[in-house]
Amino acid sequence: MEQFFKLKENRTDVRTEVVAGLTTYFAMAYIIFVNPAMLSQTGIPYGGVFLATIFASVAGTLVMGLFANVPYAQAPGMGLNAFFTYTVVFGLGFTWQEALAMVFLCGLINIVITVTRIRKLIIKAIPEGLQHAIGGGIGIFVAYIGLKNAGFLSFTADPGTYAAVGGDANASAATIITNSQIVPALATFTAPLVYAALALILMVVLVLLKVPGAIFVSIIASTIIGIPFGIVSFGGMASFTEGIGQSFADLGVTFGAALYQGLPWLFGDAAKLPIVLLTIFAFSLSDTFDTIGTFIGTGRRTGIFDDSDMRALENSQGFSSKMDRALFADSVATSVGALFGTSNTTTYVESSAGIGAGGRTGLTSVVTAAMFLISIVLAPIISVIPSQATAPALIIVGVMMLASFAEIKWGELEEAVPAFFAGIFMALCYSISYGIAAGFVFYCIVKLLKGEAAKVHPVLWASTGLFLLNFVVQALAF
Image (tube, helix red, strand yellow):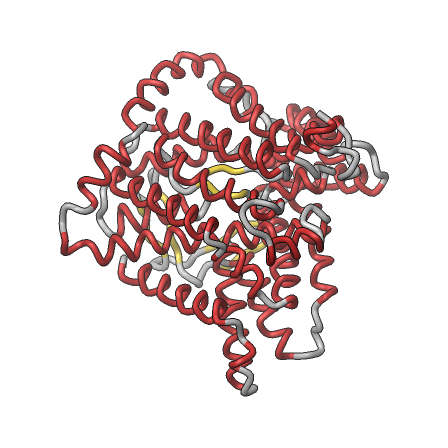
């Protein structure tokens, strides 16, 4: 194990990697429940998506750990599954089989742009100031996810400013979409919020005292403390095992549907071909930049991708650097996930929780993958751990990652403006790729105004244009 994962070389050990893998898993385990709930609105069998989510996560995370030897986990991405459901199926009118076919093709495109070094050229083209902004922006994003999951925030929307998608506004199955009239505020300090505050304080104390495995210990301790608060729910545990058989039956419906139903239907109407191609492109763009942002934001500062890796990335051929292999692992996972029956599989920003717990090698990913596999039978037990117990881990990791902002020259507006929009949009738009898009757009504007357009890398110009085209595609859906 030492020789395979190079633990000593990466200044880690088996215990640290196992704890980090568990920490990453618990930070992102919500996806095995949230993803089926969202995608099943399109008509995909719930049980099939449940298993597809797990198998796609296991496959992608194992490739990341065993092939790339980096501590990142993969799963169907939040945001990408919303785009799949509300834009592609509800907005553009495609069937879920056609949408899965587009995700499958998106994965193939990502494999091509990885093998042909296009992804590496994109990373090389991003200015250093923007790279630091992406790292700090992911810190804000991760901390914001933590604050929201903990229940610290409440949101108020004015009447007439929201709409229900997928059901009546009063139904539990409906998704409420509102506009910018929504106002955030601190939630009322009822028992759940008091519990969340205690969980956060406990984690801060353990981290500051440098208790071994502080983040993971805090998650378990907070779960136990949550029982008398009524936060931990044991409902549904008894009946879950009865549904496993049905889930495998549902998987028989979703597995391969992208190929034998989706692809033939997708290209059967020539008039729909332009919008099909633009939608595949939109999937690919978001997936690509979510991953690049996560790697840049978390990998460089922690040393997972050091300067030698970055130099190898620029000059190497094939898969000689860790970044090469990590990008390839990510691109393969999307097509695998689509075959099982789920939306784009991507590298999870919650991997930063495990990295914050000390994870530095692929052993972290292997442990996370094993936990996802075990989830098939232990999902009821795992679901007992409340989001308020794992949320403080994301907040603490977000605090750590904000240090990247210190490397930005805030006194120079030409660097500060793109950095600001990259960091803020990433969190408030709930999307790494949108934050990168904002940073790219304002960077190009700044360089144009200063008469330095020639200094902008051609790949950056092209990426900015593609982002703008992506926004056009989404506008067409509505």
